[in-house]
Length: 249
Image (cartoon, rainbow, N blue to C red; front, side, top):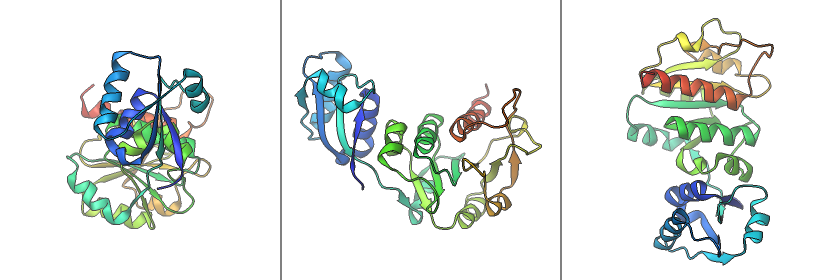
């Protein structure tokens, strides 16, 4: 656990409550607001043993700093990353086909938070990143994730290549690395079965050893003048191509 952070808004607070209630240190609510959804969330907090404190809307505006807080703010301790020894337990409990997101060297906490949020929305079972030269679950990353830092397991490993071997061997995962120069288009690949999507870092993309442990490299169609997408945007496009195929859209 690390330093407390601000979590604001009904959805974000509910995610923290359901996936990490013990991390909540304080809950503040607009004393003048009486809508049904807020009342339901307040009841959930009270059942978890958390007594919200009534404050003014102006105080919530100050604390949330531009976030649409919807009348509620909590102070919560940022979750800690999960150790690699727990990865098999996470994968064994997940339903197949597995969907795994690997972030190789994503260093901007805003990008990490956005990737976690998209991973939650797309049904990713676990997000894996190396410990070195990668963003961790900082308050900034958790804020951008909007509750997904609590709902999606985030595993940091010391040796990413070894972990990729585990995924390919023990879990029969097909590992696809995203690379702008790849000749194969992700949309033309068959993405059923256990799958790991690998995204490279903001500047240099995937490291060579990571590339070597991919079963295939794929690109996204680029029809404009820009050469690449931001890593969090590319992650969203790639994950939702998997969702599209698996749901038969």
